[in-house]
Amino acid sequence: MINLIDSHAHLDHVENLDIALKESEKAGVSAVLAVSTDLKAMKRNLEIKKQYGSPLKDCGDDRCIKIYLGLGVHPGDIKAEELEESYEFMWQNIQDADVVGEIGLDFWYKWVRKDDAKHREQREVFRRQLEIAKEFDKPVVIHTRGTWKECLATVKEFGIKSANFHWYSGPVDVLEEIIKSGYYVSAGPALAFSPQSREAISHAPIEQTLIETDSPVFFNYPEEMGGGFTATPKDVFKALTAYSQLKNIAPEKAAETLNRNAIKFMKGLS
Ligand SMILES: [Zn+2]
Image 1 (tube, rainbow, N blue to C red):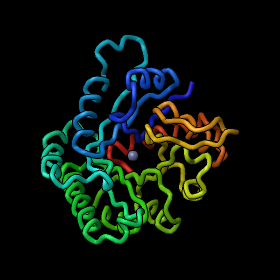
Image 2: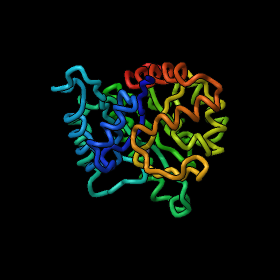
Image 3: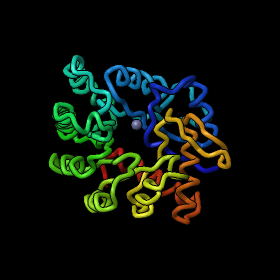
Image 4: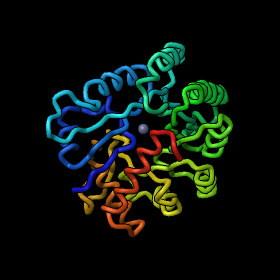
């Protein structure tokens, strides 16, 4: 049986989490990195890590899913009135976190693209959190769309050692710079059909690639591929299938390297 690490999921948003994690464990998921998007998500994910995190009390001989934790405010989830409390929460609980994320910049939507105040706000929130990551030497999980170059430049400016540009679907020249900088990119189930994701991942060396689900995102798979589904961590196997076909690497072999990368990433190694 293949074991896999889901290196990006929003467990705080997954319905019937207990069942979803048990099914994922049964399917072969060995660990999940639970990333956060706002204060409520951080509190919930910290609880989830404490509840499920390894070592589990009554794990016995059964395999145990391990939960890693990311603390952060997502650029699309900024609520000005709770920002100070969010940073405070991060400072207070950073020792329980494995990474800072998901953080970044997103200027994708037209109403954001044209709004300078929104850009300034996103940049400020991003930088405040990179300061925390730098201070505690934590890896970062980056969300970025429409502003890949600036995002990478900011991460480098802070001297961050380990970063994952999650669900990377940006231009290849920025991808090459990400790889040169020793950072990672990740791919999810969309790799089966998204031209941008396929183009990027085909250029990324396996040693700097992670796989993930971004659960509970809905993936609009065409009927002939089984139809659309709301992801849970077990769907990281769909990402593995797409990855091994795209890169022409046996799934067992790909899984071994991808898992090793996920652990290296969370330990802050590149
Ligand atoms: Zn996400």
